Amino acid sequence: MKMLLNLALVLLMLPACSQSDVQSKKESSVPPPKVDINMAVISGQLEAVKQHIAAGTDINKKDPMSGSTPLISAGTFNQPEIAQALIDAGADLTIKNNDGATALHAAAFFGRVEVCKVLIAAKSDQTIRNNFGVTPKESIMGPFAEMKPIYEMMKQQLSPLGLQLDMAELEKNRPLIVGLLD
Image (cartoon, rainbow, N blue to C red; front, side, top):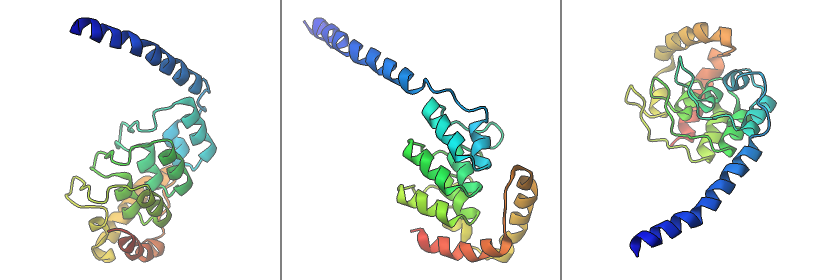
């Protein structure tokens, strides 16, 4: 009797599963744009990111080199509209890159006030610690003068990809972000 009940349950659920597959295929019938989603994020191509979302591209896929997701890249490269689009599409706010940083860690560290606001509004977990044992808030609480050489190095390494870091703006934004974070 129990086996028949289980079989009946499975048979009842099969049509729902097949309809779910059909619907997801309909939703992903849009072809993705030619530009890779990570490149679209880094270069601020919101429409291309939206096309990727419509095409069913994995928005949580990690970059093989850095381990960054498109949302982490949006935080790093100061793309608040793209961050919002990714969040609206269900991007995972807790994924960490190779350094253990979430999108909120990246946005806070790079002084991206608007991206931080988007992530905080989406209830991004502010207690997650990166591989260095610090939360997003703790990552920016030290004196700017001590962190400036690290920012200069990051700027030099990532500027070919389009990273823009204005040291005066970064120094000004760090305390603002500390105030935003719990």
